[in-house]
Amino acid sequence: MGLKRNRRFHAEVATSSLSDIMFFLLLFFLIISTLANPNVIKMTLPKTQQNDKTNKQHITLSVSEDKNYFIDKQNVSFEELEASLLAKMGDAKDQTVIVRIPYNLQVQDLVDLLQIGVKNNLKFVIATDKK
Image (cartoon, rainbow, N blue to C red; front, side, top):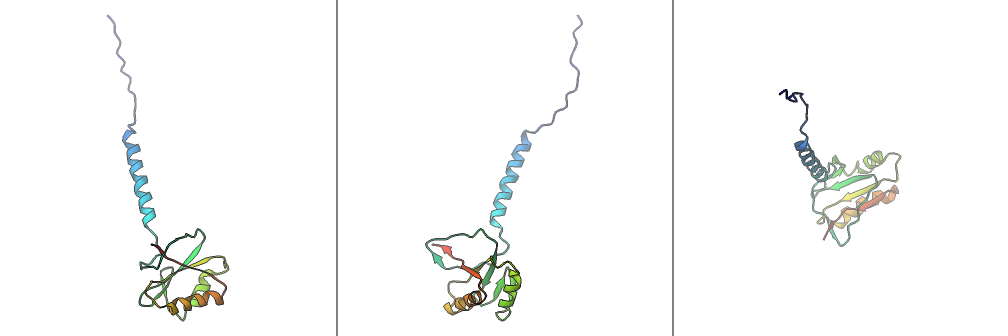
């Protein structure tokens, strides 16, 4: 009897584990990207019932509890704050300035910051935490 055996070599790539690895990588990067916000300085914000979010381009103006002023994590003195803010805005006056100020600072500190916005026709928004 002359039985022939199939001796051809068939190349295969095992991709069953590759899809699992890609799924875990996708989850990892999604979780990490939501946790990372490079322009935020940690502080306790005032509480509010409603918390709206801005989707426009914005500049973050943060004030620490010991009255250090930061524009997008760059330390600025109060005397240079207005000039630095206007330089950061450039020609785009439609940008929103998000003011992040701790809840335990005096109201006068907030009013001093808002006066800079009123003087230069800038849009200021106060950041708050949801209750």
